[in-house]
Structures are given as C-alpha cells and as structure tokens.
Length: 137
Image (cartoon, rainbow, N blue to C red):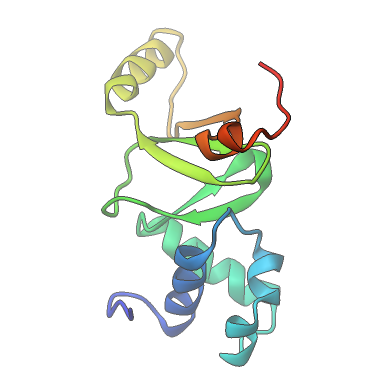
C-alpha cells in the first residue's frame, strides 16, 4: 500500500484515510492506534501530512466537518462534490466536471477570481434510508 511518491508520514495518514468509513479530523487520525504505533504523536505532523496529500490531490478536506477523506478516484485537482450522510457519516465523492466550467464563468462575470470549488451535500444515504433511520425530507 506504500506510495513511493509520498513521505513516510503521508503514507501512514493516507492509509488511515483510505481505511476510514467516514471523514476523519486530524485529531481522530492522531488517535488511531496504527498512527500512534508508527510514532506520529503531534498534531502538526498530521497536518503537514494532510497538507501534502491535499497538494497531491490524494485527499480532500470536507469543509463543513473540518475533516478529511481519501480521494476515491485517481488523484485530481478538479472540483469534486461530496454526499455526506447525516446519520452514519459516510461520505461519497462524486465528479462534477460538468459544473466546474459554468461556476468558473459565473464567478469571472462577477469579477471574482475562483481558486477552489467545494460542494457538500447533506442528506441520508441509501443504506440508512433502507434501515429505517429517522430523517427529514
């Protein structure tokens, strides 16, 4: 699972994100046994590793949760959208290529220089809906 393009710490954090069932904050990553056994003990170390993963397009920051997920598709720097289940926390990435250019154009028309697009959708996943979890529509 080691990626030769990543530092040791980035590899440890990346594997933790890949195995996670929901987005992880830096402190939740720090609390993971596998991370502690690898010798990562300082929040700054985790944040540096996350920053490297973000720059390489291998992870995304979920702004509304202040948490991180591994990129589910090939490394990319294009916009992505996230469907976040309010019941179980599962976060699913989806491509939004068709929206990216119109959003850039609309921002440009308003004199706004857009450098990042973050789309987050909150709702209930199919598994939670089928299990009868309480939700509002």
